[in-house]
Image (tube, rainbow, N blue to C red; front, side, top):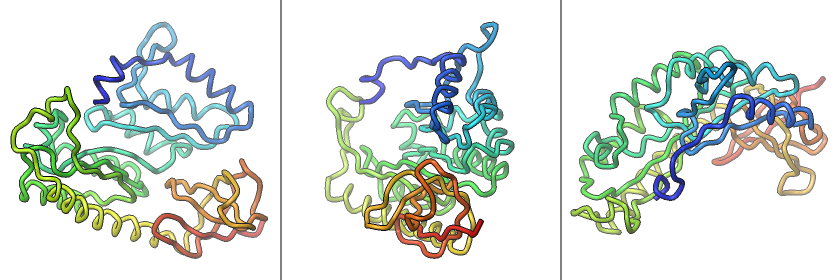
Length: 277
């Protein structure tokens, strides 16, 4: 329903975005996220009326004093261009995290979803981005049980997940929405089949997320402290890969970026110790 609800996409200008980013940085903001339903389709008016793309905008934002971290979401595979991939390679302020939804691993299902990319295009794109930024954490979106999806086509999704490798992901079973083409398609998948497939998919995705978190144990990283932790004596921050990192409250103040060594990892967070100054 999202495309029908939001209307046509509109791109803010370079000046609007950079001026807002400068105001935020002036107020002490250390990290900003560029948000859009399809953010890498952005093509805002730049100086002298020339259209800029997202990669070029990120390079400009990286020049703003005080801003230390840049992120963007949500992306679409068909709009990942060379300039954006170069930003992942060359910008230290662009965090090594990418949310790149694919939805399914079967080309027939992707076409039925009107996604305009193929399995091969997506996997090739992931390989190109990882060549530019080998330390990348990949996130994605998935839907199980789209109308007409067969067991073999669902297995195509599982194999794509195994090949791409995800640090985290969001997954759902298909829900018909009145007024959308999918709701009127024949061969609706039974609810119990959709749920069983979702359970298998989530088990694989959780396994990959846990493995990615465990790979952080022993690493040192800069953590942006965001807020008090859930328990007394704790403070919570974010790793460059968007994981929550739990620290002792003496690690620093909200807004500080502190060097940390990761000592343990859970399914959804890391625990760290600040390094001595």
